[in-house]
Length: 230
Image 1 (spheres, rainbow, N blue to C red):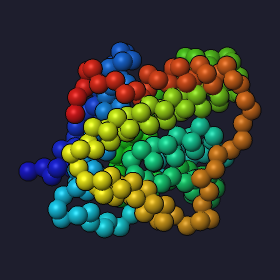
Image 2 (image 1 turned 45 degrees about the vertical axis):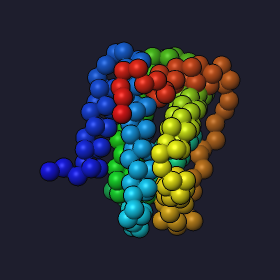
Image 3 (image 1 turned 135 degrees about the horizontal axis):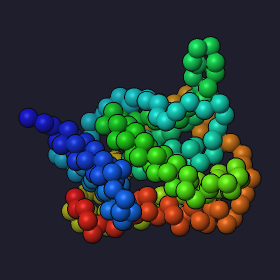
């Protein structure tokens, strides 16, 4: 018999698979948005059990590909998704075949890190897909700012989603359960050595590109629940 988390993970994988395989932006966004809400709800309910919140040793896993330098939008996306799933994100140095690269690493409880990695893969692919259409022939500055705009939209939608969920559960769970879940981020950050940096690389600004990215990015991660329910 599957554990409760295995059932949650299976549901999230199906939602993100649906999002990757459809041309309907609203349906895609609904599936992605619900992944965050399902995991947040699961963690809050677990923390509210009489047994309390058990201490679990944090783990660290790398996400995304290898980079020769810090990429602004990836660093920002990593931090936003980490916060959404109770994790912490940092750029870390890795070596492959004698060459130094940097890569985003997520730290947190094993379950949280696993789902955060799924969300990262989905969001990264969607941003790349949208950018391939919107930024063709527009130059690097436009492309970087467009991607940052997509990340801005994801951040705003996640913030609204979590606020709505907490409001819904406020009278159903103890206030301490919400605090326990938020404290997971603090635990995750302690897993990183301070020498690892979470800052992003510098970039030139293009206000129009960023605004367009924010507009298009709303289709990646939105609070709509019309097609998918928890």
